[in-house]
Length: 213
Image (cartoon, rainbow, N blue to C red; front, side, top):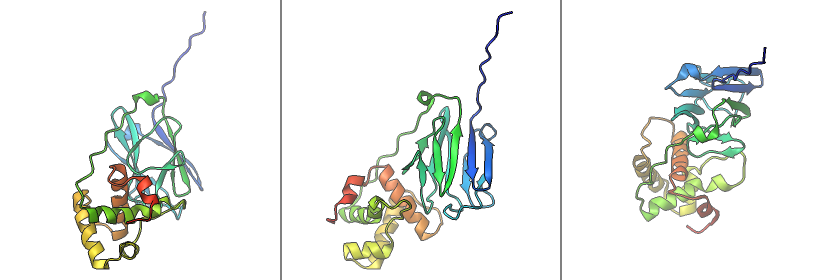
């Protein structure tokens, strides 16, 4: 009797490699839902032994026929295959997502050409001073440090030679223009704003390498 070959389909799952061991998180049970990753007790993927991971660090979300990963304004950033992401990033089989020092591998039999990502919204219209504030905010992100934070309000005020109050006023308008309304810490909102500014093209990385205001 001739041999019969059976093709096994791999349901998508996350292979979470923590210091304490490896955990497998099936994604099929989360169809239509985001899977949150972080230290918080209510996170779907809880990482408890990594000090570089935020309470809510990142989320893996369904998109089209596949899945993508998105940073949730984490303190130390989210990386895919060693590159920091500034917007949602489609996941392909074997992609390695790093949060803190924890590695999460995306496993699936879905080919990369079946993955799609929605196009980021156009950046809002900015005044010249709002643009200057965004550049000052994002400039530390090209410093080359592995875990880099956007500039503090005091650092922006010093670079732009304006008061702290003036920077806060510009940030308030920028939060509104970029739709960052959630009630969260000031630091988290600055991270989200920096991410949105870069993801939507309001500020480009080459612009951050010049010191001219």
